[in-house]
Amino acid sequence: NDDRVTEIHRTTLSVS
Image 1: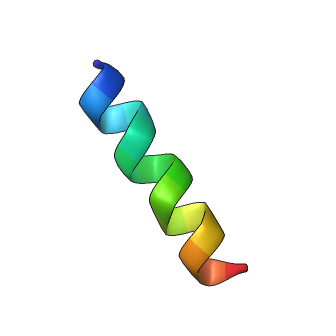
Image 2: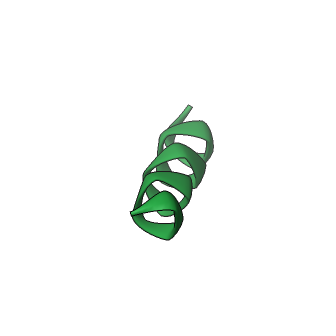
């Protein structure tokens, strides 16, 4: 699950 959360956070930063 941590991997999934980390990926989402990385995507959010990328989008930002």
